[in-house]
Image: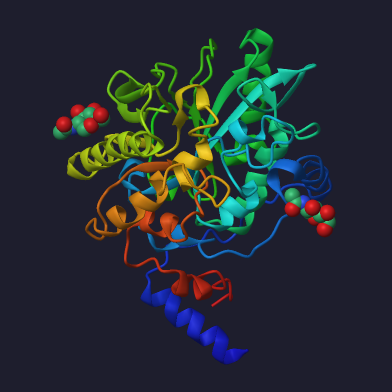
Length: 373
Ligand SMILES: *[C@@H]1O[C@H](CO)[C@@H](O)[C@H](O)[C@H]1NC(C)=O
Ligand SMILES: *[C@@H]1O[C@H](CO)[C@@H](O)[C@H](O)[C@H]1NC(C)=O
């Protein structure tokens, strides 16, 4: 026991871990259990197993959030849609808790009102009968309580139904009530990692007409565009690549993959070449063929063909992006990169983080640093 403690303490010093807040808020356990039960279809079962559960611990508090490389998931909740639409709706293989433990730190959550409740959607398709948006947020709070060095950036978009005053007020309450206000950062601009540890930063893709700031205002988003700016304050803007519906006529699946890959590499190259660390870059590596056809589904675009689809794209965007990312200089600023099926291939998340201080082996120890030394 002592030897183990000593080695983890040494490691903690070696990697220069940021100071951990001594006292940290914890959510009400009874309410938490209710939310975890209601949200299990989207969150999955809570586990502390994972390769990159605490990877942000090695980063300096002074880092601007825009300067970080944040692996993300596109349509994060669409991991287990049932029925005939599964082929075109599924964008992930793993539930939210597994994503968190695998190092994902940017989430793309789609919601909509269903009989007065905010639930999880992909386009107009309800993803789970019982899970509510708030359940997913409580899942984030639970993870952040257990991993206080980590920071999440959470995009929230209304995919289904109107964003009328009632929906806006219901959404606002989810970020400003109890215990939400302990966890959400709803400032209009991005701050430093130190300020954001243990918290979630709201990246708002829904209309909000209230007087006060409610997160980063990303509502000037452009649809299906390979390179656009979203001014979120008078001074600050994000640069985004979100080409997701590739309309290439009779092009082969491999051509669709190459077109998307080029958009991804161009945008990430821009991020790496931009010395201005306060510029925010967001790249979606995800997408599909025209109208998300059965021919190039999100899964085929990201993960390539499977044995049941031997004539379709040989390799997906993910497998082609991995070696390219691994060639980037250590510590190159890539920004946020969002994936479909982020575990195919393994090491995509690690390569996205692109920092030699962060290795899965180190994290076997770092995840256990909570030794009170
Ligand atoms: C959660 O655990 C229960 C009980 O072991 C299991 O039946 C269920 O499939 C699990 N859910 C997920 C999403 O993994
Ligand atoms: C850096 O980018 C920020 C945000 O886009 C901008 O406000 C600022 O003027 C830029 N600084 C320089 C030196 O270009």
